[in-house]
Image 1 (cartoon, rainbow, N blue to C red):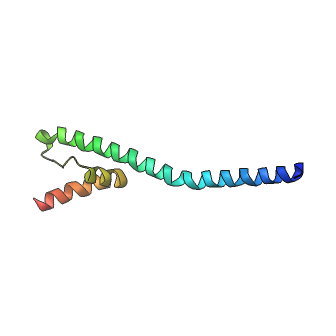
Image 2: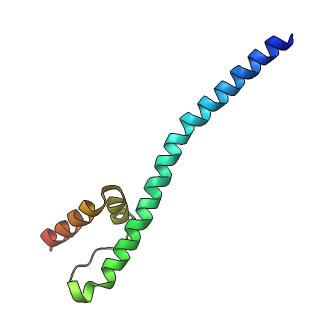
Image 3: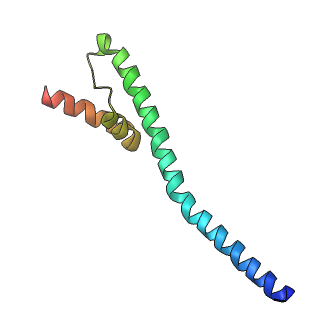
Length: 88
């Protein structure tokens, strides 16, 4: 194999490696973002439960509620509070 052929093969390998890394990075970034938002949602549920005596609003401190708040944000919190209000 000549030097030119080796350089061409090397460039193709580098191109493929960069492509694979870029394709794999998007789902990992999304998963990390959902995990971080869910952790923040869990913290907001915990803070909401600390104010139950004053506000009278109480939501369960569980993974489903944390995911809803983590994915939907403040509207998700409002939806869970309204759902709790309707069901009680």
